[in-house]
Image 1 (tube, rainbow, N blue to C red):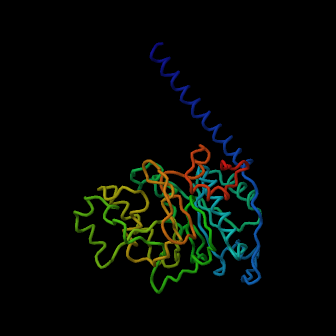
Image 2: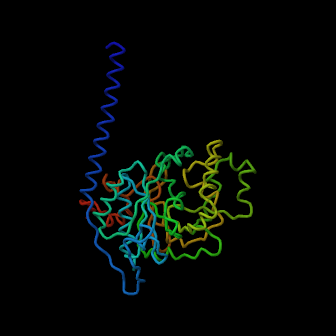
Length: 357
């Protein structure tokens, strides 16, 4: 084939491949809407505070969306993790004593079909108090450096750093949850964690972990960098479960502080793990520690092979499949880890995975 014709053929083939991919994505999105089932409706217990829900208030928001008596929960949402996000939502509602007083703030990529996501959530949770906030990927994409696993480079992983900008100013405290976890306890207990006079974050922290491993030798060999931890006793904490004071975050301009470390990372490689290290650089040693029961993390296995893991010793209020393996993917492949059976009951797929007897 002559070269001009070959180039034209390749161009047409490339166009058709992208067109087919777009059609498949559209069909997949439609299929997800049909496959997800409706969750049960959950009601407040008699001793829950009453929150008047005014549909047309002056700010254009229902009053519950600004109530400090409500429990505000932030979760990211996209088509790849929608089953996970729906499982999170169901688990939170099912184990809450005041489920009607919970407000969900879903953050999704601005490029996502928000109408589709809104319809999907409404179909599964007709009575849910929720809003969806488009997140502009471009605002953070320029700052992202490649990490050890490509999934960690998704701009939506960094949305937790921008919650104070995305959510209404009237929301002063929020519980951030990753999309690969379930709660088996009342989230109000976690949300009520005292933050003291100055702390911005509360999260389970792990001081036995090798903190130095989260940063490169380039970082630890440069005093102008590692001295950021001077006068602190930094410990690792997982950013998939956090109680955040958004007023203090805004007043301290912590989004900018995180971005400054990401700028440094672009100039010299000081860490390998995506959105976690900037949080550690800004907050490690200055957070309020939460009982480890609120983040039984690492159930997804390591970041390379996703091997099965067991629970950490002690009581459990939250199970977190952080790491490479996700329970819905392993269940679909009929290669589950033992603990994936604990996630399966919260899966809203119409034909959920059934464990062999």
